[in-house]
Amino acid sequence: MDIITFTFLLFAALIIAIDIAAIWWFGSMLIPIIAGGGPYVPTGHDVVEDMIALADIKPTDSVIDLGSGDGRLLIAAAKAGAARAIGYEIHPGLVKLARQKAKRANVDDRIQVKKQSMWKADLGGTTLVFLYQIPYSMEKLRDKIELELPKGTRIVSHAFELPGRTPVAKQGKALLYTL
Image (tube, rainbow, N blue to C red; front, side, top):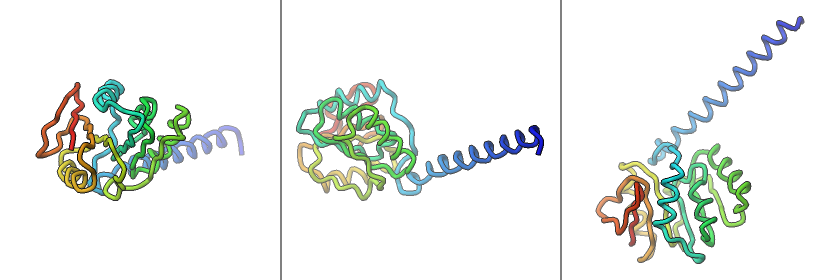
């Protein structure tokens, strides 16, 4: 086999591998939508800062992010002093990415990212919930939150309102609710 044929075959194999990876990654993006949540859209760093500021995190806080994506809110919560932070994410690539980012940020001892639907999340012991979901899932999430969380729990939502509830504070696109 000459060098030109070898180079061509190597290049073709690389293109096929990239295509397969892209199909897997973007195909997995449909899983949250099918499961009743929203697609992955990264929260901007300025919005993360607003959400953390509104949350007023304390060292005793147990934080849950429902649809935690790449883990940026979990990492920010741990850095702000939360005792623990648990993310529920259904996209396997994002779970892996979030775990890697937590390790690089040196907060992986306080962060757990579960490859699990937010609808099956155990909210027991939670004092703070982060949400960035789309409107059609917010009503169902409100019902889950009200059923499973104690009075006084704080909920910080990015952009979308919790139906039937009035935010107690707002900063930028972040909304704070208290049960």
